[in-house]
Image (cartoon, rainbow, N blue to C red):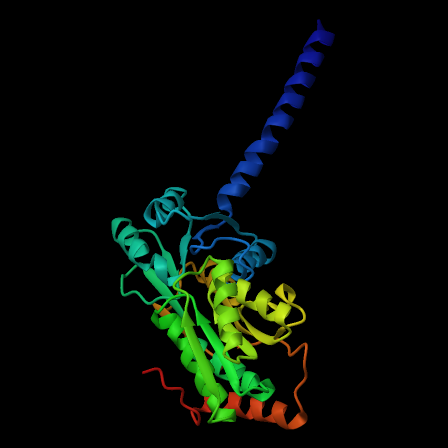
Amino acid sequence: MKKLISMFLLVMLVVAGCSTTPMTEEANIEKQQSIGILLSDTGLGDGSFNDSAFRGLERARDELGILFDYREAPDGNFEEALQELVDQKHELVIGLGFSIQDAIEKVAKANPDQKFLLIDGFSDVDNITSITFKEHEGSFLLGMVAAMKSKSNTIGFISGADVPVIQRFEKGFEQGAQYINPSIKVLKDNADNFGDAELGRKIAENQMKQGADFLYPAAGFTGVGAIQTAQKAGILSGGVDSDQYFIAEKSVVTSMVKKVDNAVFNITKELISNQKITQQAYELGLKEDGVGLAPIRVTSLSPEETKQLEDAKNKIISGDITIKLQ
């Protein structure tokens, strides 16, 4: 009888020991803070804007111990995707890209207790924090490089849409090129599409026929098509948002890096540390290390050109160089 009781107690202890582990894990999971993100139209794998934001969340997962989930909405149904993330009860829901602004504002108003972050747009809705970038500052530097390396005195810019954020890329690029060479010709085309590499190829070929020997697209996948076309033609190009050198290693001289990854990580860190985001809006430029240039590759700059670039960067930060946006 004693033997049976001992065996029963042993079994109960084993069962109890097994059952406590999942409960502990569940408790730990509940304590972990989580973030949801809705990516912009082109989704993961764009080698640019979306991938940069995703890297920021991966870093936050690895260094800060957060959990995160993401949604893509290629059909344009942003509200539904955002509401799905809200329903998961994340500490923060991120909307990536200017095209998501109307949807995130509507969902934010319907969910006033949820914290939201809009990247690439400004909103005055109380529970939305906004992050914008001074793309014109980094693009000014890239325009300088394009003018330094152009032999034809003609360069090209390709936009994905005629909207303020892309206009900042364009104006900075053009004025940076003119800072080096006031007579340089800047060809400009609007693809009105961020997801069509074939369209990017056609626009790039048309600009090259007009003499462009350096192309700078701010157009997502459409821009990738343009950069790869530049490589096939043996001309130089500039990448955008992320370091796009690895997309076309014989063409991409540098990229205007918009440090979305750093912005996402830093906001996440602030939220975890303070249990709140301290500002309603952030605007990140050269001074804030929100934009900048990737390493110079493919070609090289002379010591004089390198100094010109560094001097211009410092003058933009100090306000001695003003980039006109109107």
